Length: 155
Image 1 (cartoon, rainbow, N blue to C red):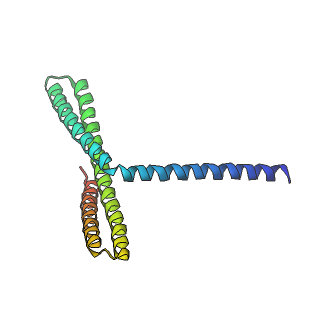
Image 2: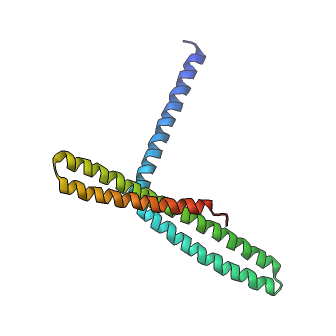
Image 3: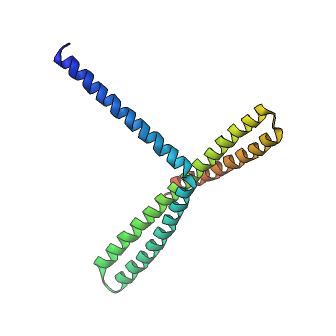
């Protein structure tokens, strides 16, 4: 076996190993996000609220500073207000996406529960699981619609 052939195999093996590690990391991250989607949505909405308040205060400071002739302060405060508005919009998008993911997860799990109940002959359990699945689908649909509207907004 030549030197370059051996080197190529070692590099290929190392790249494959790194690819497998990256795959496992992404898989764990997706599972964590799915398992904690409601908490993520709640935190994102709180961040959005705080960012909105910071943006409002910074906007008032910018207006006041411009009125008294402190243009550098007004520009800095205006920048903070714009940044806070951007953070707020981003947090809203994250919150809506997390809510949609939770709804989809509820629907999928409830659908599996309904199938299991049907296979075991538990019609009442299947109906209850079907209702939970519909609630999950409705939650995902509503959050997805909100997410689409947030992404399409130009302001």
